[in-house]
Image (cartoon, rainbow, N blue to C red; front, side):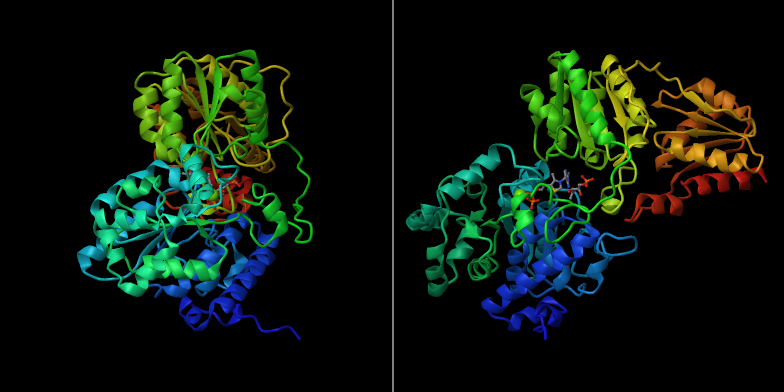
Length: 625
Ligand SMILES: Cc1ncc(C[n+]2csc(CCOP(=O)(O)OP(=O)(O)O)c2C)c(N)n1
Ligand SMILES: CC(=O)[C@@H](O)[C@H](O)COP(=O)(O)O
Ligand SMILES: [Mg+2]
């Protein structure tokens, strides 16, 4: 008979209070097994979640939740938190359509503080919670759990700057595993490495005492614990070089993040402080599951896999991914033009730039999780005579809209912004769908916007973007491309010119990006009923092809189809042109309505939104009736 699991008796963190350190360690093992069992079927962020299990178990055993608040940065490490906060049964539905989210989600649980998914925001949210606590005069604990790579994001630094000055009572747990998605980069990463290497600084207790005696209220709060607590401080040291200390944040020496007893000792001390404290915790990504330990990058975010071998379980692809096509095309461009420089923000693999980085290391830049830096730096490179191509996920580019407007568009800088994961991404859900980029690109003067409809068009679009003066954005979706034949050589696309891909006189479907394929399939369905639709691959979101729009109006019905929000999107651009032309024609704008889109297979989400062939055909049918 199987031994009953401790995990099965946990319905909230309050149930952890009766467990001792050994039992908590057993629980942590059970949680890891549960994470592996579930994600082997659903996929998910395995390595980060496994690495953070002990921290979460230790922390939540000490808190009074949900009164005490824990803010998870990115939230990709929060699976243990989900399992401890009443979602053990629901965990099987992780990242599935209608199931629980892969990130923290306040609408899912009162134990979740914010919609996580984007990096480096946790400290700002924690400062807000701590400020609210001050204003209310309450005493709930506020804790943020943030990774070493996310800590380097600009937003996190802004929060450190604020909390140090205000001496806000909150605890930062820095989960340092030396990894971002791939190996972490940057000077802060080196600084943390020095701290890990010098943890013999433990002896420097006198230094710690002196620092605290001269320090602000945070440090004094720590000293005010009384004799016993001070004794425990023998275990704690501030290395002289810890930069956070200079900002007024008390810091601990590196702590073993897989030792629950040690974690609980230190956390119980810092949770009593009345100012900001940072606990430097060292963990291993993928801890407890060997394939993830060996290859944490692949297990950062994975699809289903075989537990025994760790091998991915997936259908063979019929076509390369858009990402792969982009990466190869950019390397070809760089081989032809020595001025091309590629920039990414911690997404070298995700944006298909690994080969580029290997081939042209001196022309490859990874700025870390720092999208604003990526775009700002691109503007500087352009000003210095280079041709920067910044490859970002559409959703993360949202961080850098100001840099697009002021640093790139206003000076008309020669910058190419490649938005990968543009459109619906699937299982990551609303935080990751790239559905706003057509709006924030289209609205900015001087910016041209390309939306290639297949992989061959993507190659031409990149080539065209690099040939044009001024900023150009191009967008392409996550996953497998359409299976189009790749060109031997890239072509220059005529600026602002669409192409008709199917003739028809009863209605015109003006489609953008991969929606061209859906529009074509809809036209096939309608043709079987005797309704002939013209299908136009618009190619450009800006400038729009006014002739193609006028010709579409002549059919008597204009239908725009885009994989982005309707408000302010490409379809609205078409309506503006129709109004300018004085065309009195019925028009439908299909796209994402004024709502956030949930998680699930992209095909299913398209169907829900009426963006699949049947949905588009139904919209045309209804209007023609
Ligand atoms: C603004 C933003 N940029 C990029 C990402 C993609 N991303 C998700 S997790 C991650 C690495 C996070 O590393 P770290 O914070 O050290 O956590 P770890 O995965 O190592 O636990 C990146 C780059 C993101 N979620 N948000
Ligand atoms: C948590 C996060 O932001 C990334 O790990 C993201 O989930 C990666 O998405 P892709 O799987 O599309 O690369
Ligand atoms: Mg990390």
